Length: 94
Image (cartoon, rainbow, N blue to C red; front, side, top):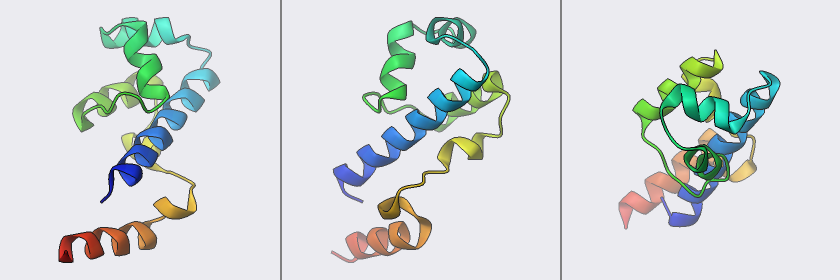
């Protein structure tokens, strides 16, 4: 997987976090307080500038009241499962 693809995934996850945070009328500051991190951490995660661990995303999902898998639904053609799997398989062959 290329760095560009990794960045698109991080940005897609960040958009989903922001979408669910805003739907629940939570500020970045409020979510950050629940997570025990800074407002900047939440901001950077939502913009894809900070790549976070799966464990952290489970905590985020818990505080947003969603299943963690929801955060990984990325509606971007290059990130759809068949395309992503093909791209990953190709990169592993090289």
